[in-house]
Length: 220
Image (cartoon, rainbow, N blue to C red; front, side, top):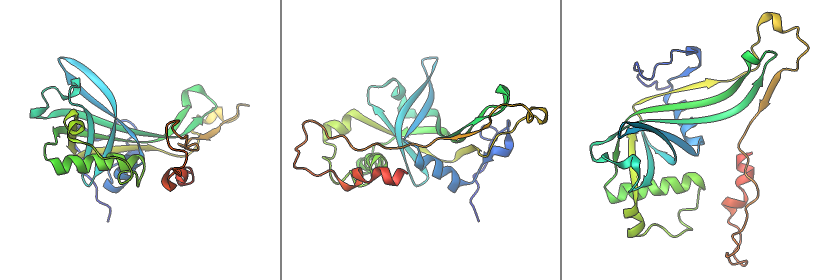
């Protein structure tokens, strides 16, 4: 049986509730497919939304930033955040402008993010970031030194208050508009990787790693 997350007044969808997803596995699939999350928080009376890299490890979301960043002020007591991830799957072109839409999958996580102090957990999170970008890369590249670890702060958000919203399917026009001589349909969207570009200072004798060379076929 699918595990459904407990809903709250903050995560229960009100508008278009038929698009709500509370299945933990499906929400995790959205989080795992995305590369960038947006972190919303308030500091010094001002609300900010910052894009950053993230990774899910079990039932927690890890994200990071500079130790000197505005986001991390006062983080010793935790940071109330709203984290969102959105995947655009298609542009829905209706006969009327009002009914144009988008097929998408989005996830929202709320809660109190705390800073990661334990060295092993911090390294595990950095490994998760690296492997999320390119599986297999962590063991090939130089791993963080002490200075780099001190300069980077990792935050952990337990995935307890989460929900997702999904729109799939085709055009939904008003009945009287279906007779209009206007093209309607869906333009599918997907993230596509191009061929790897070698750094100009990279030894030409070094072969392109298989995980980079094959990334295009995996994404397709």
